Figure 1: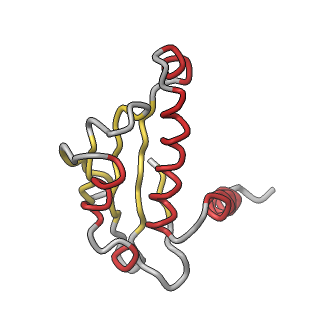
Figure 2: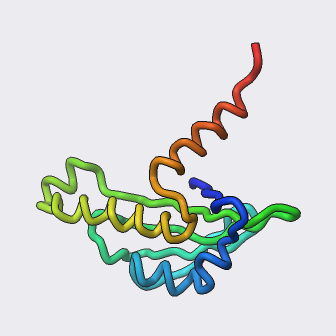
Length: 127
Protein backbone atom coordinates (compact mmCIF):
# COMPACT_ATOMS: atom_id res chain seq x y z
CA UNK A 1 0.00 0.00 0.00
CA UNK A 2 1.38 3.42 -0.93
CA UNK A 3 0.37 6.61 0.80
CA UNK A 4 0.38 9.94 -0.99
CA UNK A 5 0.46 13.44 0.46
CA UNK A 6 -1.44 16.37 -0.99
CA UNK A 7 0.21 19.56 -2.15
CA UNK A 8 1.08 22.01 0.59
CA UNK A 9 -2.03 23.78 1.87
CA UNK A 10 -4.47 21.35 0.25
CA UNK A 11 -6.50 18.48 1.66
CA UNK A 12 -7.90 15.36 0.07
CA UNK A 13 -11.44 16.51 0.88
CA UNK A 14 -10.86 19.72 -1.07
CA UNK A 15 -9.32 17.97 -4.04
CA UNK A 16 -11.87 15.11 -4.20
CA UNK A 17 -14.99 15.95 -2.20
CA UNK A 18 -16.63 12.65 -3.24
CA UNK A 19 -13.73 10.21 -3.20
CA UNK A 20 -15.99 7.18 -3.58
CA UNK A 21 -17.56 8.54 -6.81
CA UNK A 22 -14.13 9.49 -8.17
CA UNK A 23 -12.77 5.99 -7.56
CA UNK A 24 -15.78 4.49 -9.35
CA UNK A 25 -15.40 6.91 -12.25
CA UNK A 26 -11.73 6.04 -12.77
CA UNK A 27 -11.66 2.33 -11.96
CA UNK A 28 -15.15 0.80 -11.81
CA UNK A 29 -17.81 -0.10 -9.25
CA UNK A 30 -16.81 -0.47 -5.61
CA UNK A 31 -17.36 -4.02 -4.39
CA UNK A 32 -16.43 -3.67 -0.71
CA UNK A 33 -14.08 -2.14 1.83
CA UNK A 34 -10.78 -3.11 3.47
CA UNK A 35 -9.46 -1.81 6.78
CA UNK A 36 -6.03 -0.15 6.69
CA UNK A 37 -4.51 1.68 9.67
CA UNK A 38 -7.91 2.24 11.22
CA UNK A 39 -9.54 3.60 8.06
CA UNK A 40 -11.94 1.88 5.67
CA UNK A 41 -10.66 1.93 2.09
CA UNK A 42 -12.75 1.24 -1.00
CA UNK A 43 -12.15 -1.97 -2.97
CA UNK A 44 -12.76 -2.28 -6.70
CA UNK A 45 -12.84 -6.06 -7.13
CA UNK A 46 -13.49 -6.06 -10.88
CA UNK A 47 -11.80 -2.97 -12.37
CA UNK A 48 -12.86 -1.64 -15.79
CA UNK A 49 -9.32 -2.02 -17.13
CA UNK A 50 -8.45 -5.74 -17.45
CA UNK A 51 -4.78 -5.09 -16.56
CA UNK A 52 -5.87 -4.49 -12.96
CA UNK A 53 -7.08 -7.42 -10.88
CA UNK A 54 -8.01 -5.38 -7.79
CA UNK A 55 -7.71 -1.80 -6.59
CA UNK A 56 -7.86 -0.59 -3.00
CA UNK A 57 -8.02 3.17 -2.43
CA UNK A 58 -9.22 5.66 0.14
CA UNK A 59 -8.36 8.27 2.73
CA UNK A 60 -6.22 7.35 5.72
CA UNK A 61 -6.84 9.61 8.69
CA UNK A 62 -4.08 10.62 11.07
CA UNK A 63 -4.78 12.56 14.24
CA UNK A 64 -3.18 15.98 14.12
CA UNK A 65 -2.12 15.56 10.49
CA UNK A 66 -3.73 15.87 7.09
CA UNK A 67 -5.33 12.78 5.61
CA UNK A 68 -3.29 10.86 3.07
CA UNK A 69 -4.48 8.96 0.03
CA UNK A 70 -3.69 5.26 0.33
CA UNK A 71 -3.75 3.21 -2.86
CA UNK A 72 -2.83 -0.33 -3.83
CA UNK A 73 -3.04 -1.45 -7.46
CA UNK A 74 -2.94 -5.21 -8.06
CA UNK A 75 -2.00 -5.84 -11.67
CA UNK A 76 -1.52 -8.86 -13.87
CA UNK A 77 2.06 -9.78 -14.69
CA UNK A 78 3.53 -8.36 -17.91
CA UNK A 79 3.76 -11.87 -19.36
CA UNK A 80 0.09 -12.51 -18.67
CA UNK A 81 -0.95 -9.14 -20.15
CA UNK A 82 1.00 -9.83 -23.35
CA UNK A 83 -0.21 -13.45 -23.60
CA UNK A 84 -3.83 -12.34 -23.29
CA UNK A 85 -3.36 -9.59 -25.89
CA UNK A 86 -4.00 -6.79 -23.41
CA UNK A 87 -0.92 -4.71 -24.24
CA UNK A 88 -3.09 -1.80 -25.43
CA UNK A 89 -4.82 -1.74 -22.06
CA UNK A 90 -1.48 -1.51 -20.24
CA UNK A 91 -0.82 2.03 -21.48
CA UNK A 92 -4.38 3.00 -20.52
CA UNK A 93 -3.82 1.55 -17.04
CA UNK A 94 -0.74 3.73 -16.49
CA UNK A 95 -2.61 6.81 -17.74
CA UNK A 96 -5.62 6.16 -15.51
CA UNK A 97 -3.39 5.69 -12.44
CA UNK A 98 -1.47 8.90 -13.13
CA UNK A 99 -4.61 10.94 -13.87
CA UNK A 100 -6.29 9.72 -10.68
CA UNK A 101 -3.24 10.43 -8.52
CA UNK A 102 -2.74 13.86 -10.12
CA UNK A 103 -6.36 14.83 -9.47
CA UNK A 104 -6.29 13.50 -5.91
CA UNK A 105 -2.91 14.90 -4.83
CA UNK A 106 -2.27 17.80 -7.19
CA UNK A 107 1.18 16.33 -7.81
CA UNK A 108 2.46 14.86 -11.05
CA UNK A 109 4.37 11.58 -11.27
CA UNK A 110 7.78 13.24 -10.99
CA UNK A 111 6.93 15.18 -7.83
CA UNK A 112 5.33 12.06 -6.27
CA UNK A 113 8.53 10.08 -6.96
CA UNK A 114 10.71 12.86 -5.54
CA UNK A 115 8.55 13.02 -2.41
CA UNK A 116 8.80 9.24 -1.90
CA UNK A 117 12.60 9.41 -2.33
CA UNK A 118 12.84 12.12 0.34
CA UNK A 119 10.68 10.06 2.70
CA UNK A 120 13.01 7.06 2.29
CA UNK A 121 16.09 9.25 2.76
CA UNK A 122 14.60 10.67 5.97
CA UNK A 123 14.19 7.12 7.33
CA UNK A 124 17.80 6.12 6.54
CA UNK A 125 20.07 5.70 9.57
CA UNK A 126 22.94 8.15 10.06
CA UNK A 127 26.38 6.55 10.10
